[in-house]
Amino acid sequence: GENVEQHPSTLSVQEGDSAVIKCTYSDSASNYFPWYKQELGKRPQLIIDIRSNVGEKKDQRIAVTLNKTAKHFSLHITETQPEDSAVYFCAARHSGGYQKVTFGTGTKLQVIP
Amino acid sequence: GAVVSQHPSRVICKSGTSVKIECRSLDFQATTMFWYRQFPKKSLMLMATSNEGSKATYEQGVEKDKFLINHASLTLSTLTVTSAHPEDSSFYICSASLAAGELFFGEGSRLTVL
View 1 (cartoon, rainbow over the protein chains, first blue to last red):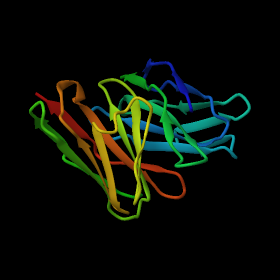
View 2 (cartoon, chains in turn cyan, green):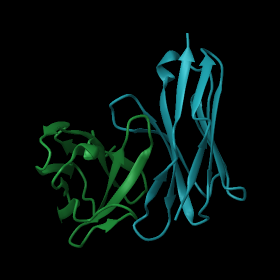
View 3 (cartoon, each protein chain N blue to C red):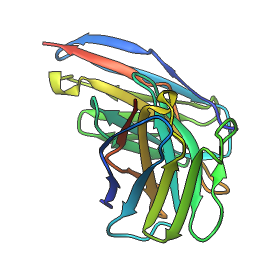
């Protein structure tokens, strides 16, 4: 089955700096890669996603890059703000069957004011 | 975006009792829903894939008789934790997706078994 690894597990940055979270996946049949932000006790919220036919996608301060060959994808947050503090999960969705989504282990991001 | 509603948000029960959690897609039909379990400060672990009108597909290591899943309609899936024990205490969260692929999550249910 799919295996998604995520690094780092914790990340502290100063407000205004950039944050980068990296993930790798194992199954080349995965074709959809969402990123979720989860605040304590809340449901995960989709913040950005990318499909396998695209190499990069940007939405204001958030961007995601995908390297299909290397099976890597990364989340970039620029000009970080305290409200960006949360746990971020990457995920990979399989293209076949029931299209299961496998999540990475999560990154706790702390933005220090 | 699509809305997925999950109830109850919190439940406390005694050891040995059963608890049912409902997951509803409010504004779309979901032929497939997913049930996840999340331990504190951990990732979401897929428990099973719930398929409307057929048996759920369980992930390896998840007890089918312990976690009963029923997907009776295109908008409702239920997870029943049978004969609950303290080790079943966790955050359970369901999700459903549209054809485009985006996954929408319910609010989650925090189960505490005394």
